[in-house]
Length: 193
Image (cartoon, rainbow, N blue to C red):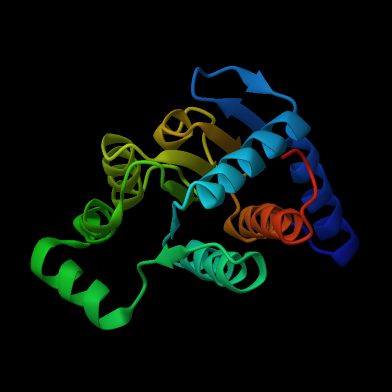
């Protein structure tokens, strides 16, 4: 962990530049190509009447909620998160936390919808299962992950953003900035489309 603000900000800058994007075939994309592909997925989902579902645990759940808020309010896109406490805790208590999000994705997902899956490790079982159920339902997927470059979540999306960091704080900042970029570009109708 860095000890000064300047070194912390320098590490964030390094991570933004080190971010990798790959498509469903595993081909590495330029950062702008990946961002444009993600924006195209979001736009086509909205244009075709689909909805976005955004999932994450802990700090990533906060990023998911913020993203859902901006998609609904600023972009005018239908979007869901599954963090409503009574329902989430009932599902987790009765069936196990690893099935809570996936069971809700299975309930709500429809062909043409989009799942945005956020996981620092890319190994959270409930996020991996959510992505698999979304794919089975005919959804497209954007993933945001970190930690190991071979994490399984990175293999499940149509567009996969990977940040090479093992440190939760900076990783969350980069994921949050990336999600904010998407909603800002959609709000102001910038980028391809």
